[in-house]
Length: 169
Image (cartoon, rainbow, N blue to C red; front, side):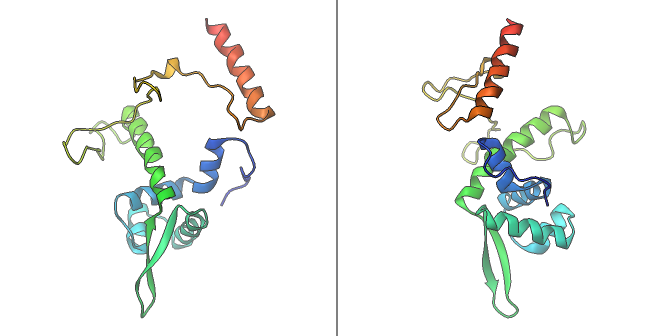
């Protein structure tokens, strides 16, 4: 499925990418978040081959993003559901949808799928907020800094960020 593993890399982004696997897995997670549960429904929605779908479902299950639940005994059949860890990926899916809508990747007819607050019916969007104050933060006001799990490679990246940022000031 992948040519190089990100396993052991001190990077939260790489860790999530490793757990998800690839673009087909992202579409499977999308469909599971929309309530599709059965193999044939997932295959129809994504258009992926049986071999690829089986492989991605196994990968997502091995990484505890989904679990199989038997819904029929004879013949034995399973459906797939997001785990708590898998439901966390909905933030990622929402972010991808929001960027895709902004870029109009589906054409000029508008977003193919909209997300709304179930209680109010109002459209929702992801935003970055200050963890303490709740105030919205613009991307240009973000500044990465070393975390407790940083290694030498993280520190090297931050050095380059600081140099580039100093050049723009």
